Amino acid sequence: SLAEKLRAEEEAKAAAAAEEERKRKEAEVAKAAAAAEEARKRAAEEAKRKEVEAKVAAHAVTFTSPLDEVLEFAKYLGIDIEKHADLLWIADEALSAEEPEGWERGEAPNGETYYTHTVTQMVLWQHPLDYYFQELYFAEAKGEQMMEMAGTSAIMRQIKRSQRRRNAEAP
Image (cartoon, rainbow, N blue to C red; front, side, top):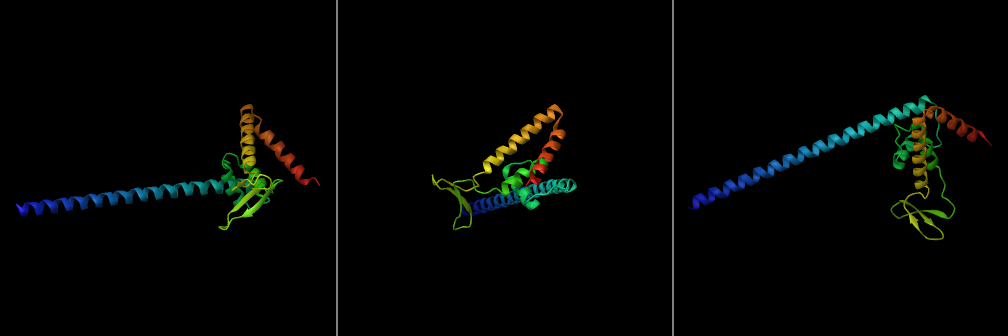
């Protein structure tokens, strides 16, 4: 009968509305969980950063660039700042690196920096030496790992720091 059809349609609409509401609530819960996870990650990253800042301050390490920029660039280069705080000098060096011979810096209309090789006209959207500094970090980190296995890590780090200090003081 017509009344039964109308009742069935109303029940179907109500069931569809209830399903839509369930999906909406489920999506809200998932979104809130993702936001909470992102906030937890940011807090953990900030705690790690503060710990490294404290280590740097305790050892009276100085950089040519501001520490927050060094830490941010270290992250970009892939440096594990918690594990290899003693290698932050690589990020500092990278920040102050000039363009290598044959490369020119340019600025796109959107404000982004790019680099052009004057001979090949190759364009890079990152500094031409970024890869070099990433490889330098990996080599230094691997060297530290090998030295730790041999039990000489602390001694070699001290020797390297002394060498860097002497090089910096040399005219």
